[in-house]
Image (cartoon, rainbow, N blue to C red):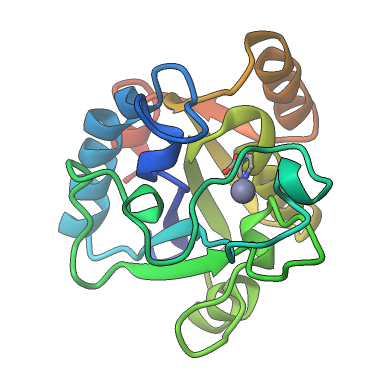
Length: 196
Ligand code: VGL
Ligand code: ZN
């Protein structure tokens, strides 16, 4: 049965796409590919989760307050919205992270839904054991999310055709680390359709 699977779309938000405050090169190119995964999961009645970076205006995550990054994905702004071409179904479960002004939070396992439930609790309640993970950015949120998923004993399929990184070298290193730890690389054409 397929019921153990879920799609997890990481941070496909305007600020991480060209023209955004923290552009990931080619970030928007994951959108049409993710739309194919979305359609496949939706037609098979499998759950779709979308995480978003959801920062307060003032946070230690931002350069101005001691962190690494220019301001991005500030709650309620256009930059924090999902890319307009990402076709998320109404049933998509949206989880938000990065709200604590004192802490960085890259992994989706630090994200919560609108009722304050953690992603891990939701997945466990639903009995999901296998996560298909894609989105932005390969070398930060995708990497930390995949490693946390593996540590929590999920099987992970890394959607290699639907991720993009901030930096080429660190993205290559991230992919190596994720696969070494047990994530399996798949593409939509090779690997996805055959399983679902
Ligand atoms: C991310 C840098 C800063 C990400 C979030 O979603 O990968 N990267 N905040
Ligand atoms: Zn952030």
